[in-house]
Amino acid sequence: MERTLVILKPGAIQRGIAGEIIARIEKRGLKIIAMKMAQLTPEICKVHYAHLLEKPFYPWLEAGMTAGPVVLMCVEGCDAVHVVHEMAGATNGRKAAPGTIRGDYCLSAQENVVHTSDSLETAEKELKRFFKEEDYCPYSSPLTPFLYAPDEV
Image (cartoon, rainbow, N blue to C red; front, side):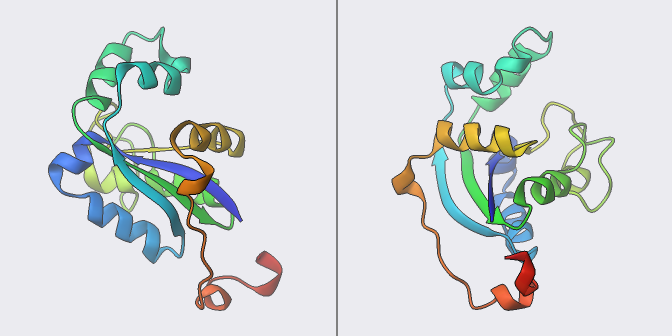
């Protein structure tokens, strides 16, 4: 099973749609094994978005990510990184397909309600950035046989 990071951005919290996004993740059959609310700092944003520091939009990105609390989640499941990233949709909400989180809940490339890891390597780094080992609460679900074939788990 893979683990991936999901950040519900300040806009999702302010708009009161965090529960809807969490429900979509759970209804898909993924498990949330760690979750907490936090206030991101400019310092952590500079680390988390280091690959975007030189982009002209970075100041807006940092301002948006530090504007209010976020919800940080570790989501677990078969191919979780790919599945969650596809559920999020295109970064620009105007280009995201209907049915994706961004396609249904935003119209902005910047204020796009959710961050998801884009690769297994990125997910591992990002999860270590926000969670300690003791933050994880893995659990067994009696629904697993109804979510996956025996050779998938």
